[in-house]
Image (cartoon, rainbow, N blue to C red):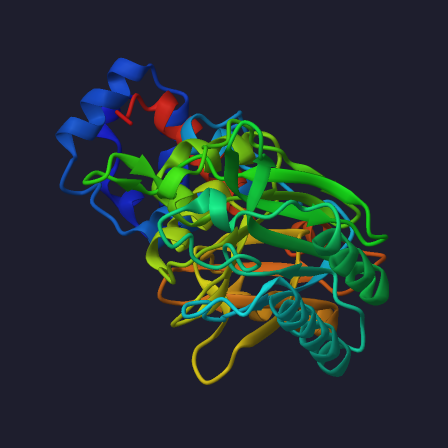
Amino acid sequence: MPVENFPQRCWSSPTFLRLLIFLAMRPRRAIREFISTNREDLQMNRRTFLASMSSLAALGATPTPVPAKGYAAKVKTTSNRPPRKVIVGTAMQSFWGQYPGLHNRLDQLAGIVDQMAAQAKTKYSRRLDLAVLPETAITGEADGDALARAVPFDGLVQEVFTRKSREHGCYIVVPTYLLDSKEKKLCSNAAILVGRKGEVMGTYRKIHLVVSLERGTMEDGATPGDALPVFDCDFGKLGIQICYDMEFDDGWSELARRGAELIAWPTQSPQTSQPAFRAREHRCYIVSSTWRHNASVFEPTGKIAAQITPPHSILVHELDLSYALLPWSSKLRNGEALKNAYGDKVGFRYYEDEDCGIFWSNDPRTTIGEMVRAIGVLELEDEMARVREFYRKASVRR
């Protein structure tokens, strides 16, 4: 039967599925002609299309998922891993004004870590996993000469944070103007990661330094870094970016390519729209630690999972690095289907304004991926891969 003569009754809901199957067996040229001829009738909203695709999937007629191109190729699927709860602590603390001296500043920062650890125990009855301090927390502003303000990490600074990490059993991101070489007059805007046992795991040196076009300098004489380390922590892979790095995608893309699941972002800037975009684009959590306005935890949906504003100064939040992103579907019912099936064994935040949500398992014996498959819904990237394959077969330009 010619495609153009397909019965009009097949536009009704039950038989629309048959139309999709019918088209899937036609040559591409015939499909293009059909779409061109019936363009007005083919106008339908996203939900109708996805519901039709879901029905097709139920009959086993959907294409096999294929590797996605573009940003989706960078996506890290973590839903098939057991729950990985991570308690992160961050701060909003101003360091402007007269510098109090290194000893006093270290006492201040040690107190901030103590507050994070105390809140973790009070709120979650567990120890803190990661503490993120604000940009250049140890040294404060460069005041025109970064080298004069820079300090070495070994010695007193390392001693303080080694003690705190051992005391609380947590990782600590310690930002400072770091003295790299006094003889060569080299310093960097850096963040040092200290491990749970007090070991120095490594250093990230800010690559995108703020440029003074008037003076022709980068951050008052600091030297830019050239490496993007990803740290293997016991909860997952951690990356670090600092302040102005936010404006440039190369660092974020590379960290994502290397598998970073959580990115600490010490910063003076309290912006939220750009980190929300980065979190969604690269499917990672971002923890901002700032000087003013807010400190936030951004989740892979691009939404803010937790945030503090004045007068609060400490934020402690639990996240799960093993999660599933689920788009709208009639089966999911905005998350209620999983809630009805698993009760408190599943946790989620569903955003009706985005038609998407993030879901995680609270059951160590069952992954969120297993829960999702049990109720017959697709994760976001699986759905998009199938839709792209459908478009490819239909020669839809994309």
